[in-house]
Length: 94
Image (tube, rainbow, N blue to C red; front, side, top):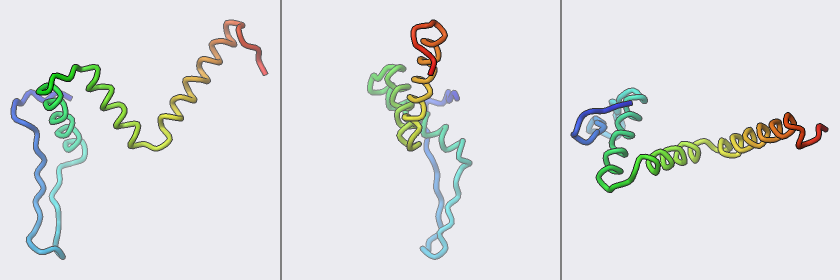
């Protein structure tokens, strides 16, 4: 996703006056995500954070929002490493 605009990305949320009639008008979720990522990227650039750190932060935030995902990916990686060791003959098969 690229956003070439130099203006900070903003999300607009319109509501009616009465609390019983609150009806937010929202952008589609992908447009909202794009705007939030663009704004986060702009903040990182303004504060001198490099791309690698930005990507690590985004990845960690994504994993934290999906309970169990980090553990699942770690398990997959471990299984792949064990399979590779077995393929190389460095680990016996059970």
